[in-house]
Length: 164
Image (cartoon, rainbow, N blue to C red; front, side, top):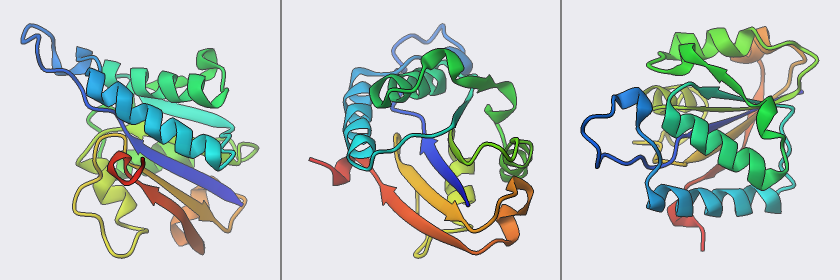
């Protein structure tokens, strides 16, 4: 069994026009909404074996904040440049490359790719995976390279606005 949890990075700040897109940090509202997701994940006893994140500052900050909130060592979060401006095929490439000894992965990246990716699994489809939106899918396979053909179950789809 493999479990893949997809998280769109939290809301980022646009107040410094001199920063590149890659270097934009989180906005305070993004931090607050991420805390809601952390509380939800903790209520589910969520504990991934691996957290992968885009190298963009906002994604790294989101991944590190979640890691800290769920008791995952932040120094073990793996930053991956290829998840920044990734397409759906790039997401699959990253996931297929995960060692099969790893059973549960959280992947933090960007839209529109994450919406497109999760819509391959969720019904009804999501119009837009919002910032800090989180989707957890469990696949009936022991091989990451076979998830696209495996039976699967969507364990949860949660957005910050759904939580108190």
